[in-house]
Image (cartoon, rainbow, N blue to C red; front, top):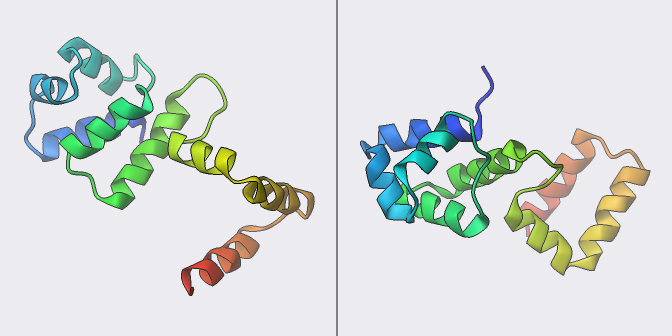
Length: 121
């Protein structure tokens, strides 16, 4: 079964032994709202609330990235995780890089080489 934003939040909340009401209080929303998210009846909340969730659940950097990606997928419209949207919008060179990659039909291997070269810096 594919992991959803709601199932991810439920899993992390229960792993940390945080009640639904407890998480709701930590992020300043209603328990009904959190329950609706966990059950997949609502899309992910706004970016500031997502950051509150990450902090409240003590998510690692990797878990936070996964949460943001799952949050973007939960939206009804085509979107990216908000941290990526801001980075892309703020950096025109990233636009050029993405368009070049698209034009050249960059493969996963091409992208991995690019990631490896950045990581080696």
